[in-house]
Length: 540
Image (cartoon, rainbow, N blue to C red; front, side):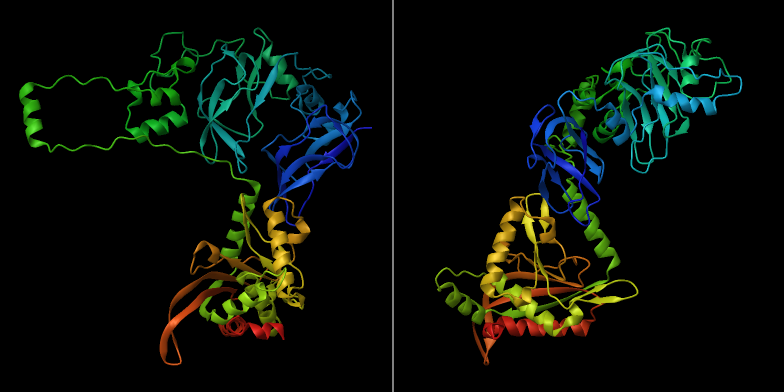
């Protein structure tokens, strides 16, 4: 029996996922435990295993596309099994007008036949598309095709103006444009009938009735000839103008490119449908040669104008689709920055004794710790002495965490992840070093589990290895604070009244003022500096 596989919730904050890669294709055998796909969540890209055995019958989300949790991801069943019922019940209903016919029974006028008419085979009802996540209605800025025109799959039907931009709308069907439901300049809600495409000679009125559309007051396009301005004769207008003789036919992208380059669209010949100007026409446009100026005027201009060599180049941009991780990072950090009142406290730490202690520790067999490990250990011990910093704001309450779980920010190819060291205060320096190395390695290899990135009570972000001496971080909510660690710098310092060569490190604490007052944050930093400047105290 076929089984529906839905988009899994791979983390507690995951709302949608993106299929980074399919490791199986339709028709492949699948065994329980086989890796079906790599799913990109808000925290990491993870391998997703099948819990069923059979044949992969259907893929619901192509590579590179995202979908909400519980959306239809795939169907696994017996080879050749009929899954049409599962597709109709497990996914969005297909735009099959036969499925819409029952609705016509209740919405048809009393004069309609008792049995709703069916849409003839090969006829497709095109509806106003939802071209943005906030779009509720759209306006037809321009029709590129007119009634009676032949339409191929991929042809531009019209320019639709949404709440965000004017966009080209392509046809997903081939046939003849039989009916235009929304005229140029008119606005209609999403899913209103935009057009009808099908075989030439189809009874449009019957299709409109079958599609539950109210009968138009005026005769249909099939019965009454369209006004001349809507159906111009071929060749009756210049190739760059619409039927109204005034508006130049050009795609929104071509218009923007022409404006940026100072090109008059009236001088451009369009190579698109109906002489429409498209991107390649602007890219290949060569201005017509200007008539030669009189010799005397040329000489005067040459004498008066300074000889300047204008720079020549071509502007180039590339838009890359944001990964699911990048979108969630943006969302989470924006929420933190604009909801938590941040303030920053910075101090300088003498690292001479820390450097000496690290050298002695790393001389031991099979032992290696980093300065970051020492900072993490010092933070864990300082948090036990200052529990106000180890808190979370919950609106009417403040949550005090008796445990210390420190998140360590790790840069990965697609963004940033924060593996969490559970009960960090109970770990030794060597345990911290081994755990950070293991978690960071698996995070970069996309093998880390969601549970290993949850539950932090405090976060450490270290850019010292990149030579950054000082920076500030955005709090990783629901934490109340995050520590930014800079590089260790060799510089002159004053010790015992003398200037000597020393090694210092700048650290900055970002605090949520709702839970951590300035004095509390300052006291935490003093304790943290004492641990780092006297590492032996962390071993007591």
